[in-house]
Length: 246
Ligand code: 4H7
Image (cartoon, rainbow, N blue to C red):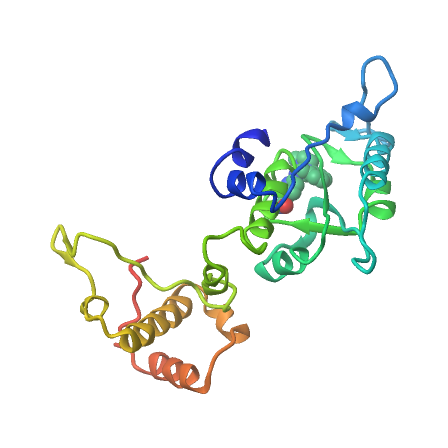
């Protein structure tokens, strides 16, 4: 399940250039019985199976023993992907990108013994308020968001800083050729070559879009007094032109 995403595009480049290493561990390899049992019935009854603590604790212990944490790099986050975790965000991605190593634990199809949560995991993260059949996709989402923040992974360092959610705003609209498609023209200003005007237009569009689609983001966004003025102007008039077409 992890092979495909990690073998293409940005990941492949990052891994090939030794900017990051991704190791996949199967908790079945940390069992001692003939059938490599990783789950068992839930105490108290009920339909679902529960992942046993031993293989997960042993897997993490083995992984830890192979990690050489450099002086000062401090702790090793052991992250459990779970619906009850801290809601994942760009801010958390940025925090995680500072660590030399991360361990992510994925429950698969079933729940995880509570002792893993309480005594092994150092963090719990949820990628959103929905249920997944396993933690793998959630782990890949977290790894993708973190890896693209690592130095050298994106083509230019500027790209990650420009991202939606880094600034606290949504991204401005983008256009490429043709100049007119089915009668829909690219905004004039983008063809003008006036970079100051273009930057201003983009800032305004990012704010408009955020106001329209995710107004709650504006409260936390890093905005200049000029931006604030712009927003107050947009909020006032009914015909402020707020429409992003959604
Ligand atoms: C840990 C505990 C993450 C992992 C329970 C994981 C959503 C998210 C999982 C579960 C996840 C998220 C077991 C809960 C199967 C759901 C049907 C894996 N789901 N599961 N149950 N939002 N599922 O980040």
